[in-house]
Image 1 (tube, rainbow, N blue to C red):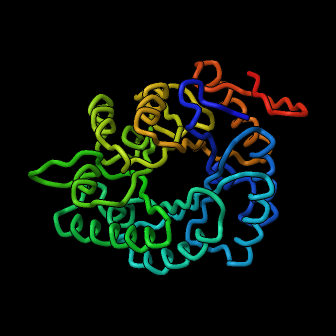
Image 2: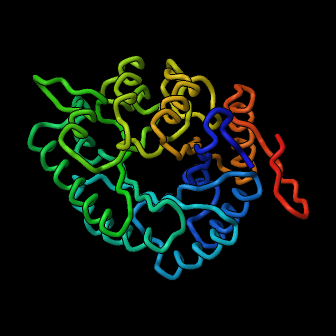
Length: 300
């Protein structure tokens, strides 16, 4: 089992988007991924199903497999709330997430389509911000009624707004009350970011999130190029700092999000390299189970 050294309540997992180029989204391929996760000591996976294409029967099959392997599932769609097709995808994803074992978390991206047509756009205008906030919190209320947490991931929108010209992610959270955050540790600094952020200011803001911060994506970008990498390396905000902030605020789910490789075996190799990176930095360690007649021991 993989355990965070200073925060044993924190769980390590990965997103199935890491495998998107190598395998199709099917019960067969996801079964292999779930069994791999259990074998390697991960505690959960993020099942990325962009437009909620998995059927009820497929989700029931996957739930059985995940429970058998003691793997939790966070369900992810890739449809932003201001997209015209969002509500249909949300409705189907909500049906699916209730069938899956685990923490009961449904995640989507906070922005995309409203930025696609304008390369100069850095954030939302006031009408978009208010509409987005109402939609997100309305979904969060529906989800909360079924013990599901609805969360959004920071994407390419500016992390901080400019009060004179546009609004950013922090403004969204100031205008909502129960929608949660999946923090992507690299997106505020990537080449796709509408405005690259100051890492120190991001850290300062994260330290105030409390129970609004639910999960994190651990990934890496080239500091200058800003491109997503296939294995973990250094980040503008050190991973040690992110993990420490998570532990202090009881944020329990940290998922590897890596650039997808073309072949399944390379995906596995990239995961191993990333875990080794976390072990070498003394953030993570492996334990093995020793069964005796009377008790279970954990040895590093």
